[in-house]
Length: 211
Image (tube, rainbow, N blue to C red; front, side, top):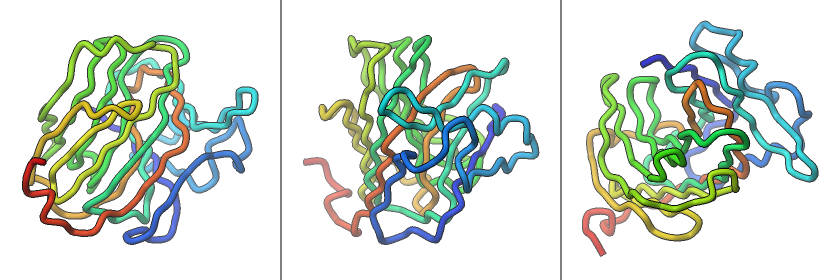
């Protein structure tokens, strides 16, 4: 599985809230501070700031290939974290979502909103192998609307909300070290991302049990 990595140049974020709304970035270009790190500069064109009416967002344009594309905020080093992003598929329903505890293209967690299959899934990518940990099927969502995806990792207890409704709850400790955060999609998808919010969480014993 190939991966294109886009990183956001930033100071180290480990204990403060942060958000990316893209409102102050010029449309039609790769946002300032983004860079391609996998040796394929042409792929940077897949990620641009786009404006539609009063909305400004990060747009990933479909490419003629498969694989996983990630937009990861460099300078973030987070373990326990709450992440939220708004996601929309303006053309054809595909899969996209949030990534966290990112160490490199072969090691991170991700949550996928797949509006073709109408499901939400949590994945572990460990040593280059992608494994599904938990899922929720039969969602019945509007495939062309904006949806808000939230994931909370509290001491490796991972919970997911979709449009404010809890949908997935699982645990995994394969990746227990802090890592970067960001968004992802498949290379052949056109996706809009907006209002990526990051909130570090304090270490808590609550993550070791189910409520």
